[in-house]
Length: 293
Image 1: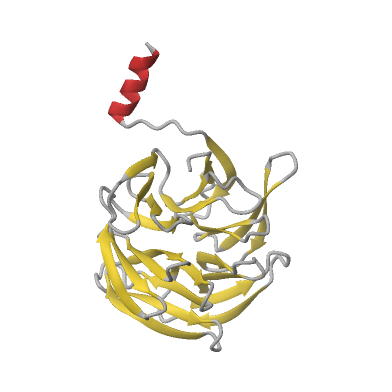
Image 2 (image 1 turned 90 degrees about the vertical axis):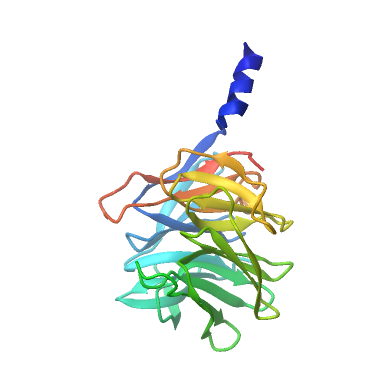
C-alpha cells in the first residue's frame, strides 16, 4: 500500500515538503534578502515597509518593522558582508534607490533616482554596481528598462537595456559576472555580461506561466524562480531554462525566492507571497520550504 501511495505521488506530481511560516501580516511581500549577519529583510510593496526577521535561540522567528512610510518598496540587496543594504521603490511619488543599515531602524539615505520605478534589485560585488528592472508603462509592451547604479562613481544611473517586455526579477552569478533578468509575461530570461557590458544570451523558462523574482545557486548551474500566476516555486537549468523541476505548489502569488543565508537554514528556500493592493490585507506570508536543497 505504501509503494502504491508513493507511485501516485510521482504520477500526479504532488509535493509535500515541510513548510514553515517565517513571518505574517503582509499585503504584498515583494522581495527578501539575507545580509549574512543573521538577518533577513522583507519588503511589503503595498505598505511601503521593510521588516527585519531573525531566528532566535529558541529556533523561533521574530519580526520587527525596520523601514516605513514609503509609497512602495520593490527590491532589496545587500553588500557581501552585510555592512550596508539597499532598496528600490517610490517615496513621495519619486522613484528612488536608497541605502540603510541592519542596526539602525527607521533610518535610510536616498542615493539615486531612476526614470521609472525599479522592481527587484541585485548587487554585483566585484564592480559594486546595483541593477534594477523597470517593467515600463503598464499595458504597453516593450517599454521596460534595466538600470545600473554605479556605487563607486557617485551613484551614477545608466540605462543598460531598454525596449524590454515587462522585465521584473533579477539575480547575479557573482563568479561569472552574469546578470539574469526575468521577463514577467513572456517567460524569457535575458542574460547580461556585467564585465563586458553586453547582452550574452538568453532562454525561455520552460513550463512556467509568469516568472517573477529568482535566485541562482552558488554553483551557478540552477535558477530557483517564483511562478506568480501558478503559485509555484520551481528550478530550471541556468544555461538553457530547461530541466524544469516543481519544488512547491499551492502558494499565494509567490513573488520572490532566496536560498537561506547565515543564521538560517542554508538547505531551505525562503519565499514571499504577494498579490494584494489593499493595505488592510494581512494574510500574505513569508515561508520556508524546509530542506529542499
